[in-house]
Image (cartoon, rainbow, N blue to C red; front, top):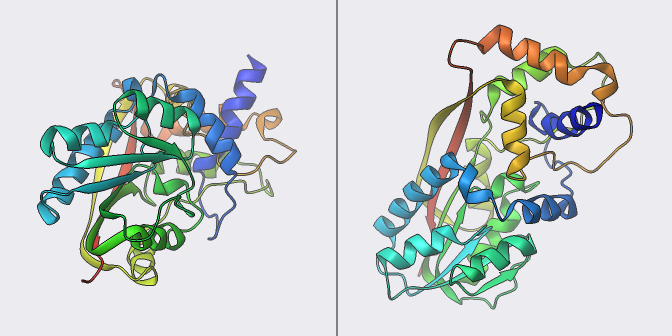
Length: 284
């Protein structure tokens, strides 16, 4: 039990506030976590499924009848499967940091490779549509990945992205803020804000056609159930490992008490996700 609490504490601290950009991200840790989650990911990500559906609507509204599409951070390839169902002539390629996710996407019928969003393994100008859903929140900065998306786009091509923004899981962040001991090391992951997105698009040389946001709420039995759900899909702490964890101080238990005191009720506890969407274009 103590070991499980220690693991959940380390992963849950990813959601605490105030990590200044650019923040450290351990990509090897992310690759392993999401690779392990590939087999169960689709069964435990209802919010991500909603995001995927809205993103595809936005993308096809701005870029109807795409011929060559790339999905960056494709996960199990569900977004490309949805694209093929709506646009059978589209040829889609999946790319994910986690080899296990790339394998799952390949099994779903998409050509798939493992790769890094900040160094796409594709030639310039190869695609007329680049998509990314529920992935860019794991990057230390947005602009390098968006610049790579721009590089692989043909003239007149479109980028459509969706990811979790700065108010994501704010209930959990608030509870952690109240639970952390004074002077505790800040090993937190910072979710990018809407302003970060707008600036990064400009830095990448992309012309924004639409930027939008929404909040999606779900409920969990209790705060520890939420932490377990995040862990199950690989969405834990992306910061590099350091010594001196917080489990020994009982931070997880204190966080749970704070969460319940602030947000608990007969239906469990809420968990709010802020979703940022953007559609941008490379000028012809």
